[in-house]
Length: 126
Image (cartoon, rainbow, N blue to C red; front, side, top):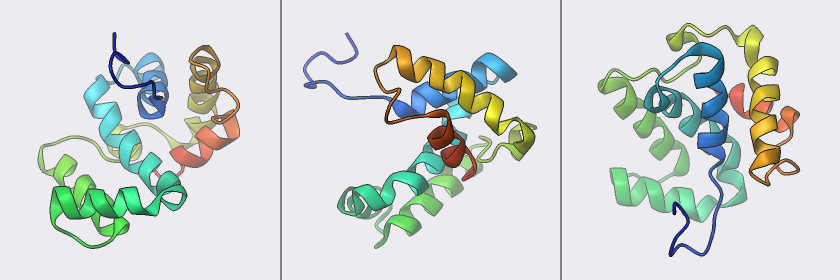
C-alpha cells in the first residue's frame, strides 16, 4: 500500500533506521532524525537540484547544505537526536548497524546500491 499511486520508490532512510530501532530500541521518528540528514549529506551530490529545491521550498534557503543544516536544527529544536552520539549510540557500533541494515536492504531489493560499506559511510555523517 505504501507505494500505491507513486510508481514505486525506495525508502533507504527507513531501512537504515530500522537497524537503529532493532539494535538500540530507539523510536522510529528519533532514528529518522538521525538518519535523514546523514543520508542527505551522502546523497546530495547525486541530485543537487533536488536538495537545492528542498532548501528553497522548505526553509527559504539557497543551498543544499543550508537546507540540511536547517533540517538538523529543526529536529534539534523539537528535541529529536540528530547524531548517533546524542542518542547515546557509540560510533564504534556503525559496522554492526550497517550490517543489520544491509540485511534489510537485501530483502527490500536495495542490497547492491546499499552495501554494508555504503550504509556505514552514510552513518559516519551522523
